Image (tube, rainbow, N blue to C red):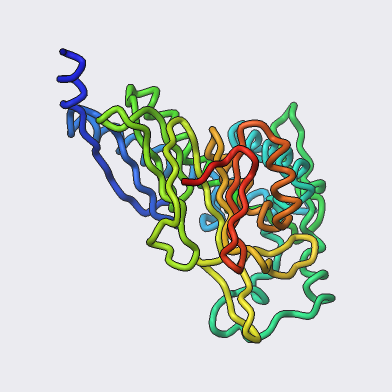
Length: 316
């Protein structure tokens, strides 16, 4: 009987905050509002701490220090920064370079994806733009925790993995603080743990690329992360064709043919990092890779609204 009374006392508490250039929504299950909001504040402080380390918008961030010294010298970084770069390089190897931290080397002047963009660069120009993208030219020294970019002009950026990492770290902190259930949602890259107050798993909507506020399907999850990469947020129409803001690091040209890729994983960092490379690799190659990795699931929607899933996904 007591157990039922305890369940009834539990409530959901939420807070939304602009962090890392995105909208984060933090949800916790607790039976005391002020305690819940205090824990959420701790998690937000943790995300702010991570943003300071990895942002390219702060001249003094360790990311910018590495970029400034490209082709010149190795930079000493915090173990946390070093380890995330190390894990990113492993993901680059698994995805054959479709995920690559050094994508920051692309000249943004040619890729602004707004109304001023009326034509694509020719394939030669595009290819020359991506010549500095190569994760193999990130030189790590595990003894001294230093990072060096081999070529002058190289730049790294954590846009493809940073939100997922921050969500995972915020979740770890909340769990350590005794929060038994919740969601950290970083603009659609989210991670869940525990159960809702009614004892049910969390219900997560998979975004419909044509109506981004309307889910096309739902997943019931707990202790899982979900991340979606889609062309509905940022794109350009040229000659009647829609081009995604996702650039293929090998050709320098934008991706076509896929509207969205959703990855389901026990870890938000992995989910975030794998969504873009599947888009780059294409449906057949991307799904083949996902099917070979334990604990990963994938849902792809192509330009004709056809849905493809990895072997372990059953959509309702």
